[in-house]
Image 1 (tube, helix red, strand yellow):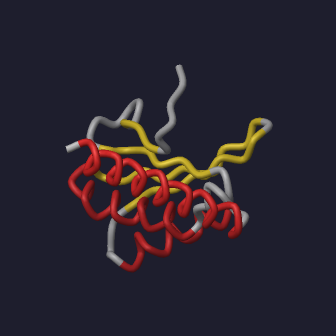
Image 2 (image 1 turned 30 degrees about the vertical axis):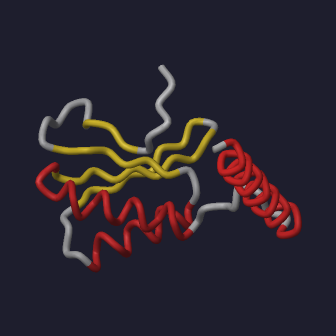
Length: 109
């Protein structure tokens, strides 16, 4: 089954959620955020072809943990369009198209 989220319910402990990270930097940053918020967690390293960093966190800390998870995603995200000229070209083209549509709607009235 395809799982696009990096967390799921713990398979054996009902009160825990498992967070998975493939990169050490993301895992270290997530761990530092958990320690900063004094959130109890258990960590493990799984190596079977791919290194997987696992964190077990109590479901009672779900809001704080999700906030830490979002901060990790925000810090290490990549831009959808990395080329700045192409990105601004798309933005300007969209603004131009909206302007043409508004002018067309006004002239039709």
